[in-house]
Image (cartoon, rainbow, N blue to C red; front, side, top):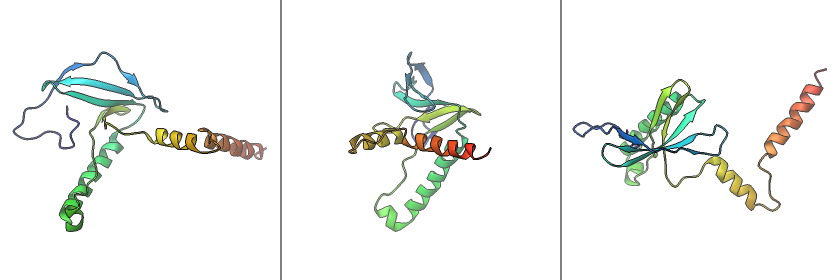
Amino acid sequence: VSTQSTGYQTGKPVVSIKQFEPHLQVIVSKQRPRKLMMTGSDGLKYTFLLKGHEDLKQDERVMQLFDLVNTLLKNYQFSSNRHLYIKRYAVIPLSPNSGLIGWVPDCDTLHQLIKEHRQSCEPKIPLNTEYKLLMQMSGEFFSNLT
């Protein structure tokens, strides 16, 4: 198990799962994913986001695309001199609708960024503004069908 973007490396021992932490932290978001921690056979802690109700194959393909872009950035002198690259993380599909995503520490979700911004505005902008507008518009649409 590795959260490194390099994954398996030839000549290095394969890290296996030694134990799982007994508790999962539920992340407040639409799908309510869980933060899963485990200890590897190398003694290091590994953290993942356990997601359900989603197909992670597309996320896995995006990481492969980022790998290709990183190769191009490395081979292009302008970007190589500036050490530009896209940070990748592990994406491990477990089934057609669940999987693990490598935990990226010290990051915020898009929801958290929007929430903080809206709470800092004067007047404060409610988080469900778009939902209310959508419901208003859909109500008008459906009432016009009859």
